[in-house]
Length: 136
Image 1 (cartoon, rainbow, N blue to C red):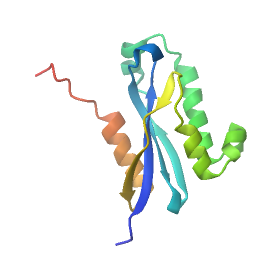
Image 2: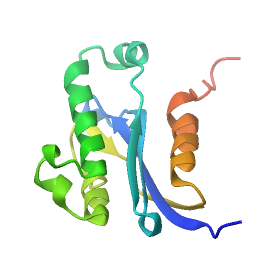
Image 3: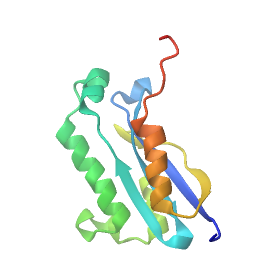
């Protein structure tokens, strides 16, 4: 079995009203230095998002998330940030900000396959709804 590699990830969140600090997880960014891996994965559940914050401009949100993807991949059409080295791009994407699109704190882990790990985390933290403790 190959040696496991250290990875770091952050959850991408939509925070429609920053002052209320309420959020919905919509994606992840995963970085593995030793494997030169940086990817973003997101899913927008429009029905859920409309129920949570119907006033959010879905097209604008998608544009911002696509920019996250392009920066992760180093696509120079995303601007100067995308030209930075992989570690700097990850740090820029996960920097604290007071905008509608934010990331969680960075969390570490170990993996053999960063893409598989990204997919697993995305499923667990974004796609699987959190059970409502008030519902039987």
